[in-house]
Structures are given as structure tokens and as C-alpha cells.
Image 1 (cartoon, rainbow, N blue to C red):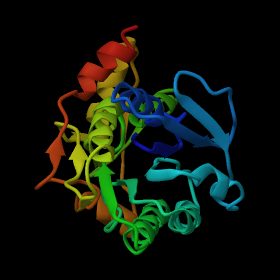
Image 2: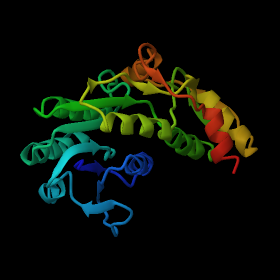
Image 3: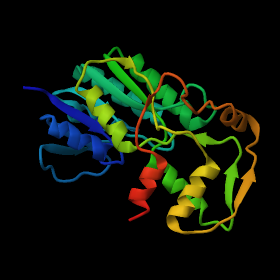
Image 4: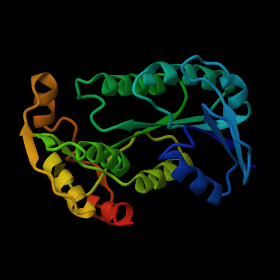
Length: 254
């Protein structure tokens, strides 16, 4: 009988898509999150503190595959190191991690933490797989929606994204989780590169709103990195099919 798969962050945007796919494949799933809930439909929910390390050993008991999706605004490297140590103690045979495109190039603290987490996984001694994905449509929608509340929408020049649908990332992760350890696999990005003005304009049109777009310049090394497209994956990446326009028609059109 196949062993239970532990999914950290299994109740989040990505996890809520991945967990049902793993269940459809006939696997028992254990979800680790900050807030517990009653177990149901072949999914066991446990609580643990990734940043503090409490609760990880019992959560990993009997687990051979770990899909690490949990993340936050800071501390992903520390949380991942704690998980890696507990996974090694438990004899985990496959450790998978979701990272972000640009983890090794963007001079921003969150990206550096993601790179630190990648290294913790790669240096764990456990067979591993890491997938870097672009920003999800959901995150872009939240960001653009907040900007659109302002009298004028700020549009940093040179800031571009390749937003990808979370469901397509989930499908890829499920495939990788059910497969063999593969190391660093090709990035997964959306089918189109958009500037912020294009994303904002599409959102405003979908909502039937009018706002002036205000060009601004991003200063310093972060601005230079974005203008150099260091946050994009333009060669060798797998591309999803769902566009920003498809996502807006479904989500905002409702």
C-alpha cells in the first residue's frame, strides 16, 4: 500500500487544488497547517509550527513523501530547514518544494529566503524535487485590485510578470509528487508576459471601472533587476495555457 503524503500548506491557494488531485490518484493525504480541522474524505489534518519546529515529528511519522507548499512573507528558509531536519529523522524518501521564478536572481529578501529554502532541500540528503513557478493569477488579482482603489493606478515601468494559473501549477505538482525525485525541474510560467499597465487595464475593463494609469520609476537595484527581467523565465520554461484574460473572465466576470 502506498504511504501517506504529507502536504504542508495544504489549505492554501495552491494546496486546495493539489490535495484533491492526490486523493483522486488514490493516495492518503495528511495536511499540515497552522489551524487544525476535522479529518475527512481521506485527508488527515494536523497542526504544527514550522518556524518553531513543534509538532513536526508526529506529523511525519510513517510519511515517505513530503510536498512543502507552506510559505509566508518571511522565514521560509528557517521553516524549511526545520522541516528538512524532521523529514530526515523520519526517513522521508522524496521531498518536494514549490519555489518562485527569480529565486536565484532577484535582490529582494523574500526571494532570497526562497533560495535559502531551495538550498536546504537540495542539501538535505533526501531525494528531492523543486519547481519554480511564476506569480499566481490570484496574487496578481489581489495586488492590482488594491492598486485600483487609488485615484490613479501606479504602474512601475519595466515591471513585468508571467502570471500562471494556480490550478496548472497544482496539476504539475501532483504529477511530480506521484513521480520520482527529479531535482530542479523546468520552471512553470503563464503563457504571456504582461507589464503592470496591461494587467491593471485588463482588470479595470473587467470591472467596468475607469482609473488613470500613473507611470512611476522603480529606483535602485530592485528596479534594475525588474527592468532586466530577472524575475522572468523566458527560455526553457514550461508554459501554462490559462491567460490573465481567461482568469479575469472567470473570477471578475462573476
